[in-house]
Image 1 (cartoon, helix red, strand yellow):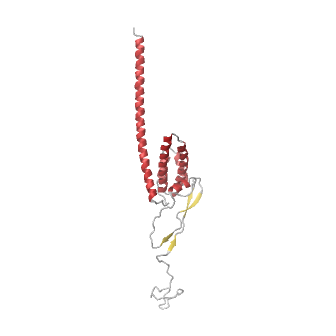
Image 2 (cartoon, helix red, strand yellow):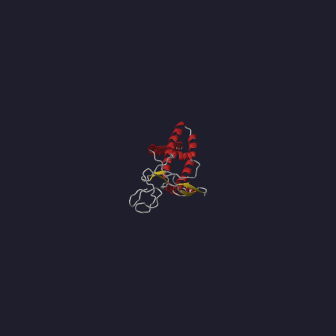
Image 3 (cartoon, one colour):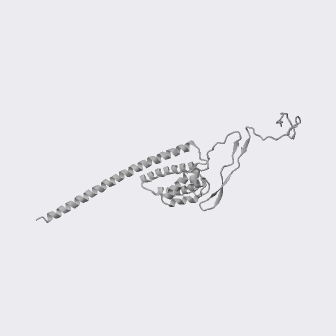
Length: 242
């Protein structure tokens, strides 16, 4: 132990410096290799049924005291959280994880719909949609917990348009949970967004063509009915023409 005043070396258990008499203090260890642990913080949340529970905001982790704090991505894959916690209405889910999982699975839903339409059997698509609805519901509750809201707000879906818009705005708010950060997942998310956009454009074009066909068919039927009516009237007049 060195004296902070004169720099003289003293025994580790010394109270005063033997050379200058300065009082010795035990300096905290701040070497570059030292590690410190951050205590877990807990927050109270309310489930969809009104029950309160405690959630740890951060896992206990070691950080270098000389290194600035950086945002670390979650180690939980969004799909694992989306499907693995399909009946879990506790916990939290970040904004990026929620929307990326929903959009990726919506793209899968679109592909499955196309396959089922091709084979002319929609049973598999209906079966998938039931599980997709349940998983989206539980994920929405965890997304609401992330912005410190009650999961009961998912019931806003029962209010046509207005309630759904309000819930959408809430689900788009930024929360406290860290997001999953992997390049391959970001690429899959971007590809799914592109697929949904192309699917939307294709659906719009197909719907417009169908509308045009139905309109032309209706005009053809009207012209045909008019022609038949004129023919019947002409035949009736000829029968009684003296």
